[in-house]
Image (cartoon, rainbow, N blue to C red; front, side, top):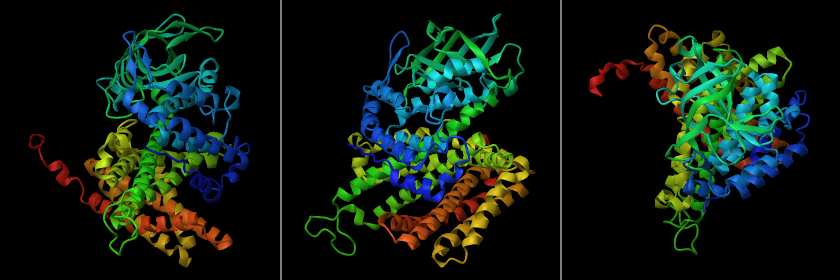
Length: 596
């Protein structure tokens, strides 16, 4: 059976030593997240995920969700009880403002807990993740009454939330949506239409489900400029907060999916359902983007999480599986064969996954801290710099981490050989579950186009120049440190590749936009490698300083070896991506459609 152990030690190293979270105590909520509180949160989250949530992962995969004739949905055995524990533990509202019943702790801490939850059970975690995203959108764009009506109940885990964007005929191009909203005399709207691929759209975990729905008000402009956002509860809410009549929204069917079977991915039918406008008319995408950006960081974490849990199970298998003898002589002479972890190619595979996981975790945490600054700082310049970082990094995180997460799950499956293909071992579920993260919340090709087409040129390239400046400054500051050379020299070379690629795009994309489209995915991958390389260099500097102060430890020595592996064996891929970018779009666009 699969295992999972939350990487608490690695998280503490990042929070306490690399990013020095206590430096942010001037921000609301951070002073409450003292070292003792963080220790307690991490310990309890790890225990809950390992002991309660993880054992349900295979159960959810086998049983899936069941829809009844009346449109109601039953979740897999144990999910309802586990969600009740999640709610009672305060995990839904970990970073929600106290005035709505939350604990107002840093978003950074919430993202750490999210990683644990997703690694333990990706399908189960989505009920919580979608709810937190809906809360975020309501807090930013909802009116006072909407916040009062919905947010406390959602924060308490008594109600959950969803986001309803996609329709049968449109996904990314939401300007094509047809769901309509008809204005009513009392200020409400009647919503009619069909939405598909709605995660957690219907279930039995809570008494009410609060749907955030994109629709077009009658007479609104065509395209994306005529889209509005509405809150549409499954059950209407009475003035005293009690539940009223059933609204006109029902689950038409559950999608038959490749993975995440424990999450009810629904076709949702709206038939004159009562909804209320969130924010301004025809500005629905602005409101929904709050939730979408939250979701994209959450999906990036899904890539990391599936990579992490797949790695842990591959390591466990590699230590136990006896096969062949070491090339340098028997390592277990008392046994008929050596464990496969002695073989260089197995070690290469495991280190590839581990080196990604540890740097990706750092990159997520760095970005989560920026999110906290955006939402909690009173310093205008700080907020601007943090917002620039979020805008630039969100597509990189979503695209790069989910591509690698799926690839790493498949690599881990390969370690198990034939047993990795057998369901009982659990590895094939990690592969299937990881695959969706590359698709939803904006397929990764769209993330690459967003990075190249919008995020790079935004504000005259201010965000990318800031990133270049940070990495260059760090490299120069540490260039004379002999111990840091294995990290600084490869990072400097990789950064030069990213700068060359950026310059090439500036020179070649304006006159010929297909050059940008052809280069986008390779540019995102190149950027992702450089970002992870920067994280490794920062982690190495801290590890070396700790060793100099207090001596080495198994954790720190392992950290440095893993980092050197990344620099030597993985970061050189930036040269490949640069070479591809510089070939342009000629061969990609040359063939006529009928030749395909």
